[in-house]
Image (cartoon, rainbow, N blue to C red; front, side, top):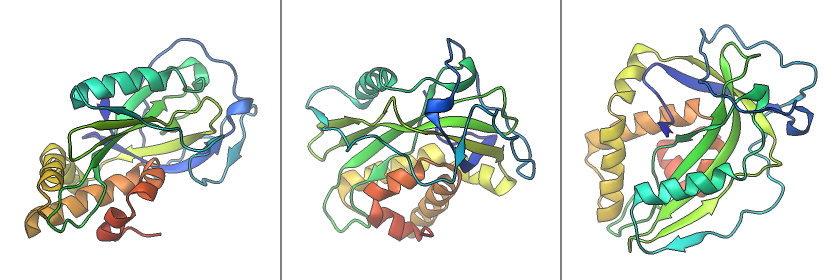
Length: 240
């Protein structure tokens, strides 16, 4: 399973695709291509419809989570991935979905001395033969919230009837590459802070702001994630 933001390209701009008007696909694989951000993807074929982005659409309310009190994050993620893939819509252009991890997100932030839960999300993505500089997304597929007691609460968010969207991609700038190179270090710093209840030092906090702001700017699933982490989004000073 890949990370949500790689060293060479980022994702941006969203166009909704009507899942009911896609040709039925079969097995396949691949990775989204990238091109300069000034060159937008061509229009989808005529048997697809586009809509203005309005958040990830679902056909029902969020399902009840499954609570697990034993195991570790890797095991919980493998289980969530298996269950989520069973509920994904068919991918366009005879491709298969690849799940991509988002960075961890705290339940409460800023910290005030008490430990807080941390949530891990994944989104589903597939390349398309009709896209030069974009990829299809089925939105969020699961959330694993690891509590302060070490238990995991897993919610499968994949929906076979969800509308897909096209998410554009562009190369990273030099400054953005520098930010991304610190991603593993910064994600660990956030988890460590959440477990201890103590805010990181000012320099690390500034780096966290830069990293997460870039992530939200370049990942469409961030629109749905921020709904569950409004305190953190406010601390990052994300635009509405």
